[in-house]
Image 1 (cartoon, rainbow, N blue to C red):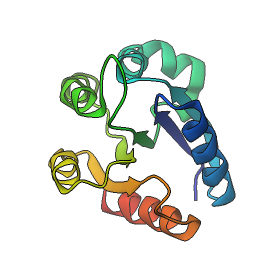
Image 2 (cartoon, rainbow, N blue to C red):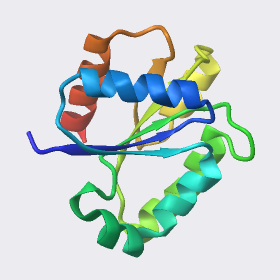
Image 3 (cartoon, helix red, strand yellow):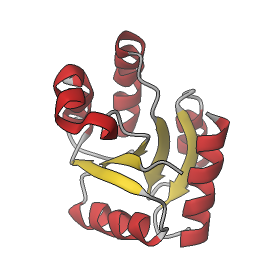
Length: 142
């Protein structure tokens, strides 16, 4: 399996740290883990496509985006609405996995209505094996 790259978009530094550790513990080959603390900075990251291709070579664009819903400035849903435009313009196809503390059915339904969202993980309610399976299934279905 070729190494993958990941973007974590979450306003909680602790949650980004925990997810990074868990991703490394899966032993899935990872070339790079990028981090953004909110949706607008993640959109800027994708908007700088040409620069990032040069800077990060095969690690860009990320294979997966782990996206929180509740963030200041721009939440996960606002990010997804804007990201659709950038995806079409830049031809990007990262797999989005929602990574939220919300287990509300309406949040799950709304998130999974976006074609790029392939899975929904509730923080603190999954284990390492589920994380690996979600990533494997999501990658194989893309």
